[in-house]
Length: 425
Image 1 (cartoon, rainbow, N blue to C red):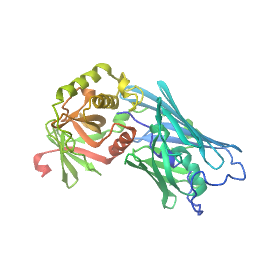
Image 2: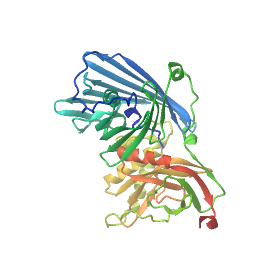
Image 3: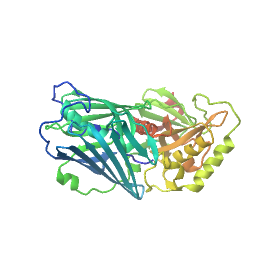
Image 4: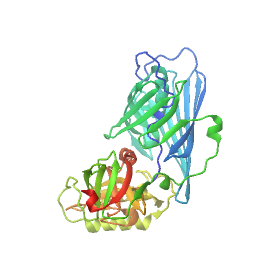
């Protein structure tokens, strides 16, 4: 499954917590009498205990306002495939921190770019050629730290340029000395969080988001230091102990969805899980109709014939999945979901884990309603129904908000072990 950019790490950068003034709504505050000094902040970025990249944030101030620029560079392996992704977000705002323009650029083999412009009528965004509506008062997430520095806290409409410009309501509050919690409730109903530990000067020393991504403040030398690319499939995997049986014990903060292919029950240490393609799950039934099993099989075959497995391919997005020709399991799942929806086959995406020898690795697939039952569909492996080696942690829509929710669920499993029937009682 593709490693995607941190969701709300950028909500926290440069926050200060000692300002006792009452919070002001974004865009309402008076412009400062003096021009702020230009600033730069450097971070190292970590996932699965390994460094995967760096981030460079700069503020360039003038009497016209500020240009905030964040450049995030990620370098890692997926198996033997090297991956390099550079994301740039540039925001233009007034001295009172009223944003007027946001440009997002991603370089990952190809170059993709989207610009949002705000005028008196609100935000205008053309995302991959399609218009997107945003609340007129919504703030780009990367600008919120400057509001925090001014006001000491934040509450208001937010959008995430690097995640398809999805919008929601964000709130950042102090919870302890030098610690803040950022919460973002997306309009789709997904809640994501980040914890921020502040440095002595009020800037973040450490930020941990809900996807397990950690940003650490760095010196110039630390940010410039080379680091070996690590295999993130291995680094983010969960070791699986014991000799294989038909039951698996999972420990962690878990509430598994009742997707087909698995059955879970509470145990003293977490959950006992049974896996088999024949298990029906317990999702709410879809509309009654003719059996679409053959259509589902045909869609899987179509996706398999078009997409070549390639772990070094660019990050899959909801918008380009239907035309992708190479990619990982996320590409396959989103491409399958897009085609299934065109054929009016009720389909949702599942984020979870796949058994791979003596470990669990991150994976993504789908569930579809045949007209009579839900079945698991793993287009990456050409399986319909799929199951027996898949552990669903979250079932969600095939959109950016859904992917965010699924990725957050991946961090909830702490350990896994095969167990005997006697031990599972």
